Image (cartoon, rainbow over the protein chains, first blue to last red):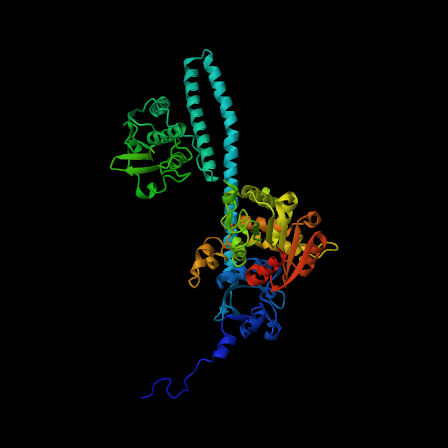
Length: 366
Length: 262
């Protein structure tokens, strides 16, 4: 029986050939940083014969920008920790082109710690580096676009406030004069619309602020009571939606160190949401209590359950549910409510039961 | 924010006279870890990170203030005042050599002497002056930094992992050495490599020692000699060390030269 391979001389790996023709470039530097040995692979990549590389420094193979970077970053790093890995360098080839590589280097030291050699291994990385460059460019483009968007939102929001204020003043003026019943009705509708526009502008401005990194800023005050603030929000919403009812159960026995204007905004956003999406023939319920260690505020409406996949997106900005209704806003209300909760070191969650949707805000009292 | 935590100031040493070490563009106060300990017996050793580098308070980075070297020099003066230092021996590497010179011009009463390691008052060539780089080359550097974060963040990240052989270094390396916020690094590169402080050199009244390496592409011998010729009370010592960081590659030589001078 003849086995395959039998009769052939066993091939022994030729280590010298492995060094010279390895699928990577090799460089050895003496303690002064001069190249003392390099392999044929590197020579073929660069177009320089080995004897032209010997005596050069690693930085002589780099372009000027790369050599400054090498001297100020990688050379110190190598000296400090004895190695570097996966460093991106551009080598200059004999014909003046750039060869992107990834380099690993390790220092070889003798028994007393004196530097003997620095060994460098180089891998071609043209495609990888191009891909990385594209990723960075894309990231940068995205960042610029995001910044522009935030600026646009902030400026727009700011510039919209003035005409809305002028319209509000005009409506107030009209109300001081005798008006027909029909006019009064129309003026009432206009007031409702203006309130809605103002709320949208506030939300947009808050979004711009929170996205530009500042987060929502609070002016906390533990001394004034929170109850009246909640009642006022409820009254405002009932006035805007006379056909709907809001059942409130408020039991606040301890002081709450919060920004009351912001909590009012949170409650208003949640109540508006409940009124918009809840069953129109059933009341919206608000429950507020202090439990000794936290404030718990729950707002619930009857209606269709919210599907799981929708629930996970609810608090993202500009998220709008599947129901398209002219009543819907920009999809910022819940996002801003959750940002307000976060600013108070609290949380805003949603539970969807068989016939009830409940948003619960919790924040620590101390 | 106190000045001392802003600049991550570290104090050591048993002596009276302060010796203050400042790192250059690229890394942080660890640059001095092989040099500073040699002076702890005789001096009060002050180490710090420039704002934006190492473990300084990045939130204190004000692009306007740090758009000129004077902003960094003002910090040096503030640190000295905060610590009540006087007769300071200021040892500055690379761009910090000029930062020290500017600080000593602003508050000459605080500084006794300057040790300038690889100084350059201007990196870009000019009529009758060889800085070592053309304007185009520096543009290329700044462009490649602005254009390509890889060199700063992605390329650095793997390199700053811990070192199993020298665990005592691992923490510091992992946390800071050579790691820089890319935007701040770009701005620091710009202010460093486009600076021109030639006209300030003759205003230095502190005595100065210039340590000049061989084969330093960033600050050549010609540049070191220019500094020596224009700082009134100065002397130049040529080191055998090559490259731009003798504080790391030849600490003993640097220590000996500073001892001779101080």
